[in-house]
Image (cartoon, rainbow, N blue to C red; front, side, top):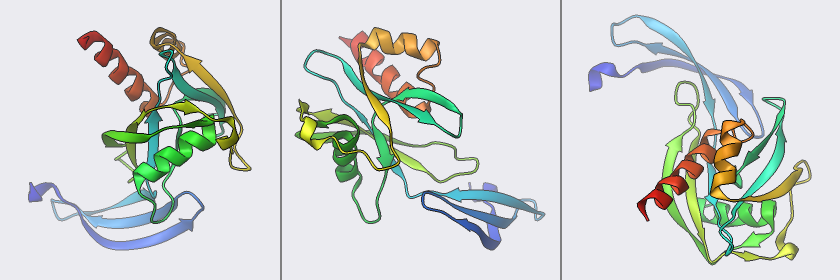
Length: 182
């Protein structure tokens, strides 16, 4: 499969941000010609599937400026430098929802947009969920509403595009598959 690889000839950092860095890379194509690639470098992220003892999926409703709309999503967040994904998952669950858990189990990891970004999202399932309002502490620029829905309500929210992001859709479809297997 080496015949498909592109060799980086030159890489220039165009932007150094708080969440992403943007590079312009000149690459040599498999046929010997050159082209450019705009690449977003991201530290990675986590997302958490959390189910209450009443069978409700814990989510947050928040405004997403990139799409200029409000979405419902599972709790998620960016990996901090040197932080293990499991630690990030537990921290983000607490900060965004006020829920704590005994631990998390890895479900799968996936790239969000491999055509132009290296963001890798690690999806976890929370174990031993407990509500602890003392642990709810959002970042100063983060505003969310807690939403708890059944699987059927979540599926309806996908149809109405209230749930419209890949990580949450993946989680909902995973839960639907688990239910079908029972």
